[in-house]
Image: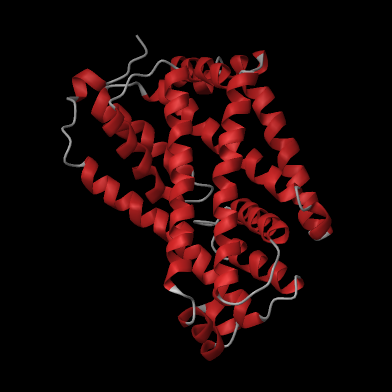
Amino acid sequence: MALVGYGDFGNTLDEIGDLPVRYLFAGLGLASANYLLRFLRWAYYLEVLKIDAPAGVSALVFLSGLAMSITPGKAGELVKCYLLNSRTGVPVSRSAPVVVMERLTDVISVIILGLTGFALLPGPIIAVLAGALVLTVAGSIFAVSRKASRLASLPILSRWTWLLRDSQEGFKELAAPKVMATGVLIGAVAWFAEGLALWVILKGIGSDIDLVRALPIYAAATLVGAVTALPGGLVGTEGSMLAMLQQSGITKATGSAGTVLVRLVTLWFAVAVGLLALLALRRLPVISEAVVQDKGT
């Protein structure tokens, strides 16, 4: 509502109402392509870790995680580990590295897309992208180092030592150069699809913005939203996206309408798909606690 009001209620609503339906469906299709590609990466990671899960269950667990898109930094997607555990018996410590690596490769992929148009972005945004890339790479290196292993031996963490060590072994496997490169490549294509959705929607409401400008704007705004640590990147993503669109010569009404629409077909569509998947997953039997309980033995 704030975005609509910022662009003037009447003008913004007119822009939204004038969007041809085919552009809306195109945006939803591109968002769906994002989910499909990320599912393929999820399945690839499970295969690397030799985690055997029925394809249907695996798909529902992955899609259920989309409902957690509104959690800060998508941290809520860790629920996928518990869902997978309850339906297949896979230990949480074994699947947790998959979710962590998904987030890391997503960050790297989005940063790469953002930096492709660095000459078009404001200096502070470029600094944030570069800083996030350095921190992500540094964190990944530390996670597979011996120092990280020593942390698991600290008295305060002794209760979870077995879990942390098991997770670190899985993380090392997923951090192998070939696996990491594959994950980043799939992520880059997936997030390119959502950036393309922004461009398609802007075209649908009459903007003449170039794709090479729309892509880095979407990527940078997504990262800014993640940095704010607010649920779903709310406020941070919308505010930065609208500001950069206006800097690109787009009017308030068009920028507000485009931002509202792209968040509808990406964030809120993802949440809706995730909730439907959760409902479907509830129909599947839960393995008894005695079977799925992971004691690290």
